[in-house]
Image 1: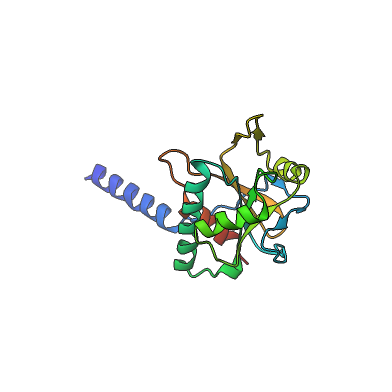
Image 2: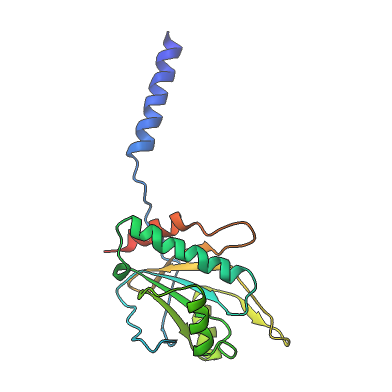
Length: 192
């Protein structure tokens, strides 16, 4: 009987801990974006301050990781909508790693290919130097070889309204998809 009571107390304690413990953990500050020098390819005003942001890096010739990540980010937007979070509460920034090839026109075609029309999803482009400077804020690695093939890290980043980097997430790699639930929860924590 004592063993049964002990197990019962343990189970009740575990359940209370599981259901009553806060589901969100404060996101750490892991860096800072010092300056946003890039331009939005549609010519829209780049007013990204005071909103949490998901930053992803891509290039339009990418054969696998970038397009599958784009499809997952479309699902992220749907999930945010289901959670009652409107598009004006957060921003998705997709930054080209190949501004030499990815002209504004090519990027807009790429955006249209995925039927992205959300006003909170901005596609950014800058000079090679400005792109490198931005990626350095995130310790994001990329390199273009002499044949124009680009290799890059597979991380995306959550940045708060004060331009503090608060989390990083994996892009879609192989059969592993983007964890949109975790990204949605992180964005939700940072929305004021």
